[in-house]
Image 1 (spheres, rainbow, N blue to C red):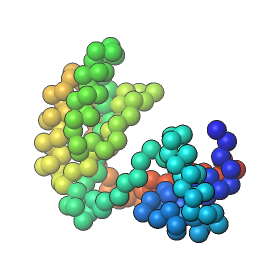
Image 2: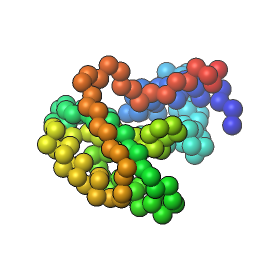
Image 3: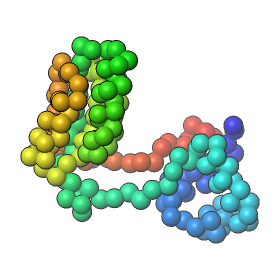
Image 4: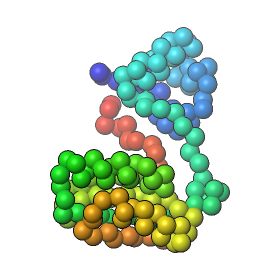
Length: 155
């Protein structure tokens, strides 16, 4: 589906502030509220908008430590991956989980209170399935963090 200028503007507004009312969105893109609602509904139905959420503050919630965990495995079967993926999905502290190309097989982003809390998560992680190597890197400073996707290429 091709997105026009108004679709792109609506997507940009929604990813900046999903709490905007339909009336506010309509006013900002110069559409009637009905036309705006139909466009947003279509963007949702077509999968451009997955869901609308509130972004919480890690620091305010006492989750001040972010850990990037690089995992190497010698097991590459579908059964191993299924068991490992389900086990990782069951850890709420893992907020992102990727299968990679290259030397590292999997990369996890883990958010915890402190190093002792991470140790608890680490022990759960290594009990899920056999792992060859687990390397943890603690983020010292968050320099950039955004949930906004680039939309300029859609023009």
